[in-house]
Amino acid sequence: MIALPPELLPQLGDSLWHLFAVFLRVSAMVSLLPAFGERSIPTRVKFGIAAAFTLIVSPAVPVTVAQSELLPMVGLVLTEVLIGVALGLSLRLFVLALQTAGSIAAQATSLSQILGPAVAEPVPAMGHLLTLAGLTLAVLMGLHIRVAQFVVHSYTMFPMGTTPLATDMSQWGVQQIARSFGLAFGLAMPFVIASLIYNLALGVINRAMPQLMVAFVGAPAITFAGLFLLFAGAPLILSAWSDALFAFMLNPLEDPR
Image (cartoon, rainbow, N blue to C red):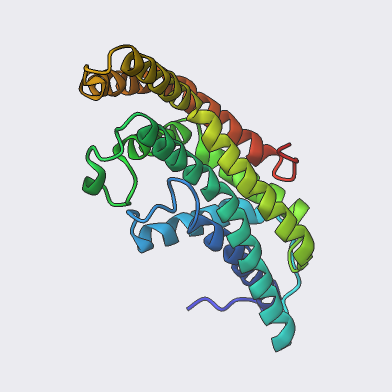
């Protein structure tokens, strides 16, 4: 059995403490990350992803001194978990934006009930399709690299062990929620405009020909228009969504207005 030199033991303890401190923030964020933190991903796989990100990120993070007292240690643990959850939620809101956009588009084009109960989450099929396609596109565009850069940059915005102010965190959180709903409505705008034109045209035809059952004539038209818009507009929708996601990861503190 090989014995370690006594002078290496303190350094080994500091290195393990540093890995543990980084793992706290990374694991909390990975549990909410797009693609990596989905409910369909097993917990053991998430743990492995968090450990891999920790090994990647920890050399770029300033080394922290191991806490010997209980209260500072508990404060550091809670602070790092809180920051990790906040960062993970800010990225999870982009996935919710895609789901909300799909729900708005499905309601506007009368496609909200097609294959609705067949998916794991209670979202329309259009929202599930956009979400799955968006996550796939993000992974293909190097989401894991962007996440590692995002975590390293987070230690500049929120240094390890420094508790952010509640007013700043609440204001930042409200901005991210507003950004998410604004992005969702912007992505679903073509479907809303098509629905508005459809209803106006239906009203004019109904006034001109009251005896015609315009609903039976218009229902196939709006269904076909919704499917065509989804086929033609999905690349643009996903491109705009991925650009917004990666722009946020480069500068999370930017005011969305």
